[in-house]
Length: 301
Image (cartoon, rainbow, N blue to C red; front, top):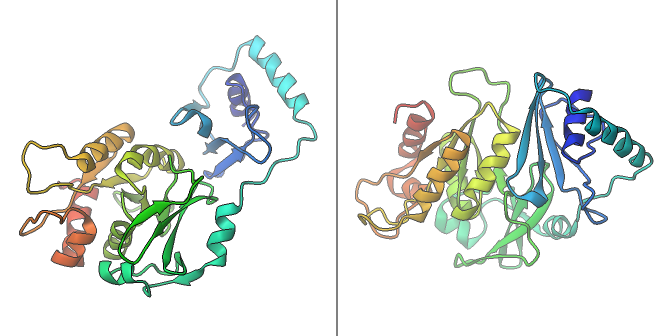
């Protein structure tokens, strides 16, 4: 794995000794302030992905067959390794995690959850009248919070890092060797994600809005490169023809970027205002949602 370390150095990063366990590992970059770790990598042994949250969606893929860096860059290896001796790894910002932990764990006792007909399974918390939704990084750090009041008004807590972060429901089974596995769903809203997970049992990542679908898809694809990923779009106006539909447009772009698939809800009687899989769950039932999603997962639609 020293070749991957040299590859990282050739891009200006010291990742230390890489760990080939298929998990996301964070490291400090030269541009980071104290307490930050913007660099990340995922290594699977013979292949790996290197990224930097400061550079948005940028990432570099390495394979064991990639030529080694030039002698000039190899000299940089020695320099960076020498500079890193004795470096203390910083700890991530804990403001959001502390607020989330201080709140009360919730399953269904919140007006928003009751109205949406979903159970949070203890993954969300309540602070007064506000439902707290954690925005997690790929390394499970809480990088921000979304609040939802009883009427459904949503706000991000100031300072939250949204781009590429999400709320994951369930776990993906990387050991699953059945056809079309492992499988992962990505969607926009919290209630939609809870419905999708309840109806299908599949790991679901909530991106919070359609503009974040692409960034979440890129990051979770880097984490699970072999997974079948389905972006479950909101059909923002199922009764319109020829009008802008940002939910489906952004979902198609996200799926295209990672070689994934797209599905959206289908209603027996389309009505304006019914647009996501939570609406489909309430109107058509869990079996209809599962049938729709698994047909796309298995490539039947």
